[in-house]
Image (cartoon, rainbow, N blue to C red; front, side):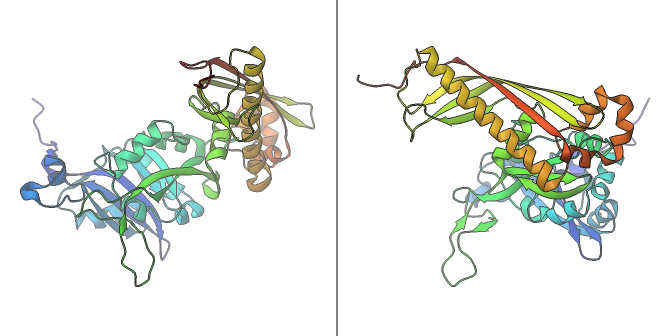
Length: 390
């Protein structure tokens, strides 16, 4: 008989849905937890007796020399045992990301209770501010952010993937950048909102709802945040990392200058092959894309193969421009390989890699790249052309 001496009753657990790490004064760490409120989850919607809706989570913060120490201090304020098993996201504030994320991730990779499948994010500003938010559709903002990342918005990175990258030469980490953005009106009169509509003035302020939104990518050199990529640059990053599986590409019409055509991406593939002649490093990048034309503002005849070919050429140039843009930014502005070219070089040139391993970012910044793109439109949706009386 095993007994039940180590049982964990759910009504004795404080279930953590999100954790945030910020830099605190005195070289300390500020740990912020978003904890599910059982009362709020029980009924859903309006509270009993017609009372205004309340926040579904309790957000609480504490500082400490380490994450574990901050957690111990939090235990003096929380009546239940802190439970990490359902944590959805781990958010790094901008300041601690610039100082280095290793000291913040060590606890989560060493302690058994947090899962290594937690989505890891970085925010401009503080993680504490980000977690003081809620979602219009999901029960909590943590669940909303996790669903957005899981759906492929931005570049999804789990804690285990971040840990592997931090321990691997030839590639530097990237994390999805998230921010609170104004997103409609408040959910209810009792809801705490994060962004006011007006600043510090004497005018009456109307509350505005704020949602956690993916706004780009954080670029790291080893463990330290060095810069940002916007959404178009992030799409180029996904192409170069062979992670572009779905999305939308919009290009100008070949007939009307002010109109555009949108193609839904159905398949994408990127192959990278390095070449080294003893002095110079060259990478050949071949990208293949397949998609369906789902929106047409212009009046081209899509029955004409020449028209389809011309649109495919525009799509190919758009993909090439995106990839070149992010590649040049990584090479010239940040000087870091965030794509994994070093790993590709290591696979092919194992003996030569020893000479480049410790200075790969410098070699990457000086490397040459050839990019070729093939784009194919396989379908045009339910219509051959734009609806017209003619």
